[in-house]
Image 1 (cartoon, one colour):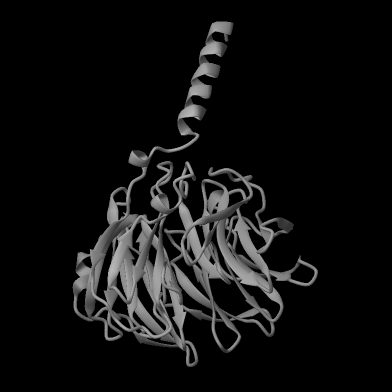
Image 2 (image 1 turned 45 degrees about the vertical axis):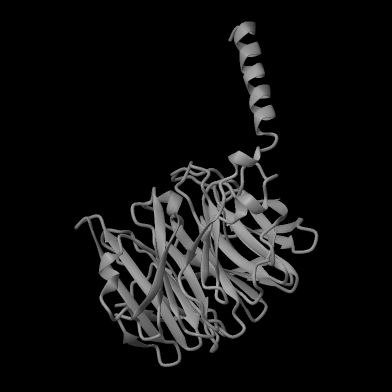
Length: 384
């Protein structure tokens, strides 16, 4: 490389830094509002929705729905945080509220964005490589991390869980777990981590790591099934964990772990799962089960009674409007109204949609979202 080339690269870099140091008002994309209807939802004031944005596009965005006004606001983060140059970043993977803070896990930007839940204004960021999901316990946030770059590699390193002080926003410790850890739950002083091994395809991980929170050490691995992903903890000390299978011979299934003995007690053989959410004793599950053999997806929308382990229905959308979905992607249930929310990623590169259903499965309203709408979190405070 010549000195002239080096100077050119340096000048170009400095110009880029200068241009990106702050954004002019005209560069900030304003939020848009869609009236969809107001409702009294009791203690629930509204919800935030995190849009992933397709990988490499830096288009992770945040939406907000307000029950009192009936207004759905798309892309609220940019105008509330004009000084944050890259906005939310690349691929929003998880969203949660803990105390007064709203936490967004931004996968490919290797960070956890921390906001004020009442204003959605930036408070700080925590650096965690290839971060995935977040849970909280006694003043700490626990974030699963692939611990390396986005790449398929049969020799990819083990992942870990980062323990973050929710006041100082500092990483206090890490605990090595299995390969490519995903969702987590906490029960009986233990953190359970679903390991996927997705980057080591076809040599998937098939274990759930058990971490003792006092020592913050892995104390056991529970053998379950390949390519684990989702987790929900019911009121009876049972963990519902999904396996994505291998997309060929091993189908997606849902397993149940007893946290008293830390062992698998049941396999729901006919219950595939892409995403799930728990409301009372009802586990809402949607599956978009892809097969490379048939090049098709088998889509179902089920409700399971977690007390009896019985599938109540395989069609919780009852009015046939699910036929307009292109790629169902996320699910949430309002704990007060029992409204069911399903997001549709559509073609993954253009704006998606969120659909609101009554508890009986009939469509109430829908709204356009950002690209790849994913995680919904309900809030008891109206956005100011």
